[in-house]
Structure formats: C-alpha cells, structure tokens
Image (cartoon, rainbow, N blue to C red; front, side):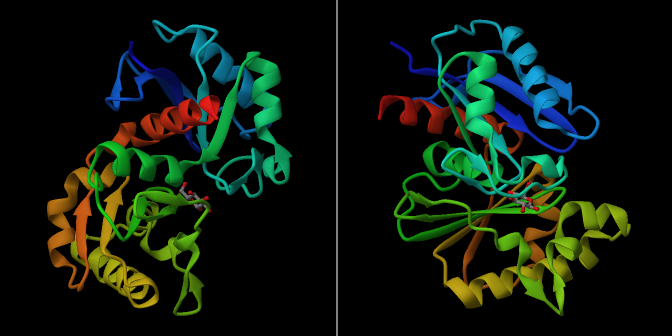
Length: 252
Ligand code: BGC
C-alpha cells in the first residue's frame, strides 16, 4: 500500500503542490501551480491552497498535507516572513490551514523541507555526520542534519559577512538583480561557503534551488575542504519534503 501525502510549497511568487509517494519520494500527480496572491496574506494564501489541493488528481480528504514556507516555523507557528505578508509573524499557521482544509496539516520551513527530501531521497541519502543543505533562490535557505536527523530552523542564509546580511549578496536573486556573471557570483559564494565551513566543519554541503541545475557553471569554481554537491530533487524538493514530514507527523 503506497504511503501518500500532499506536499505544498509556498514561495514569494508561486504556490505549487502535488500528491507524493512518501516512501519512494516521487510525485504521483502533475504539479499544480498558482501565483502567490498579491501581498501574501494568510487568508488569501489559505484560499489558494484549498483550491490548489482540490485540483490535484488523486487527492483525498483523508491524506495529510505538508506545507513549506519561507519562514521560521516553530510548532506550527510562523515566526518570520520572507517575501510574504508580515501578518505571518507569530501566526498560528497550522491552525489556519487545518480550519480551512478540515484535516491534519503540518507547516515547516521551506529549506528544511527541501533538505529532508535530499536526505531521504536525494544527494544526502544515507550520509552520516553533519550535512548542510542550502537553497539559492530569492533568499538563501538552510537546513542542518546530524546523522540524517533535522535540526529545524537554521537560518544560515542570514550570516553577516562584510557587515551585511549575506543573503542580500549571494542569493540567486542578488546575482540576477546585479547582473553578475557566474564567475563573479562564485566569488561571493566562495566567501559564503568558506564561512559556513569555518563555523561548522560539515561533512557535506548540498546546493539546491532552481539554479542548481546549472551547477557546472559555479560549483567547480569553489575551493573548499568540504564536499559540495548539487541537489537532486531541485524544484520538487519542497513538495516532497513537506509531504514526507506531514506523513511522519500524522503517524506520531
Ligand atoms: C528565510 C528562510 C527561508 C529562505 C529561503 C530566507 O530569507 O529567512 O526562512 O528558508 O529565505 O526561502
């Protein structure tokens, strides 16, 4: 019997979801995508999530729903908000989605979800020791794992380097905004990953986010002691990880 859950990935521009086989780590339906509503307010996002789930083929009311989000999420409460409405800060997100969807919902940080997908089904599968997942997108997301176990809500994208929050310099959005070549961007990534390495001595660093499919353009330029590899699940990592975490949580 397949173990199934719905995974939803909420970002500043789009909301994507699909039905997931949480044992195999694969999508069992097409991905459904909607634009993030203007302002990114809680009720508007909850409404889109409800509509989106109704359009996922094979979705059943009994299936747990995992939602990942660009925010620190402690025990179902969103404690920060990147690229979405500030109304989410200190907000009972689990409660809102459970009322709206009438079933078990588990809300987690987006990079934590992507990291779980890589650790369970992707580039970090069966890795021991300290693994750091980073996502290079609008911001820099991060997830920490020790022997495969998540330490939630690491916010390492906000490391201060040269007196600034370095996400503003080394994210993929910064590359686009400043029209940086891969070589110039890699100089900033070198600074960022060298700092991570100096602080944590990880065994493995995984690099995700949409740009990781172009990893050959920048990962070989980095000079680090630590192995650094591209993510394998890329755009589906958030959906897969959120679904896997929701399924596990519904069994507890
Ligand atoms: C947020 C993180 C999030 C990351 C990726 C950062 O700005 O602080 O919570 O995981 O962006 O979306």
